[in-house]
Amino acid sequence: MKSYLIMVLAAIAIVFVSGLIAGPLIPPEIFCTEMACFCPEKGTEALECNSCYETSTVFSIGFFRASRVCPGKEILFCDEGDITAGTIQWSKSLCAIRLFWF
Image (cartoon, rainbow, N blue to C red; front, side):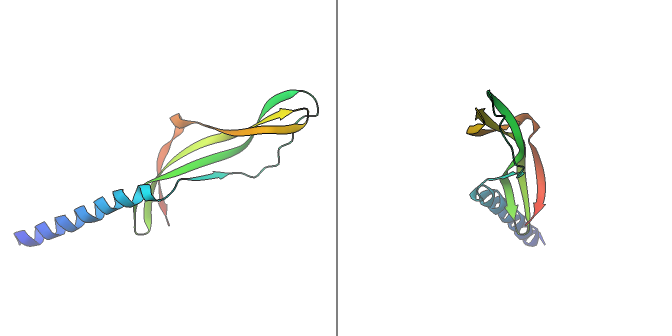
């Protein structure tokens, strides 16, 4: 009975450790909405455009994964009606761990 319990605990530990190892091997993903954003014809300014999310996997096993999800906003820099640059401003204080099914 005691050896059976040790084998079960060892199997659970192996599954847990393999999930921790497999999680960081999955590359982070960035998802953004696809709204069309237009710059004003005159002047220079920065516009908030699309909402974005970055997910980075923390733990992964079988059909289950736990990911850290951080929201952000796409910022476009405009100059005389043209988009000159863009960046994503992340809200790291609003990050949360979410559970997903593959």
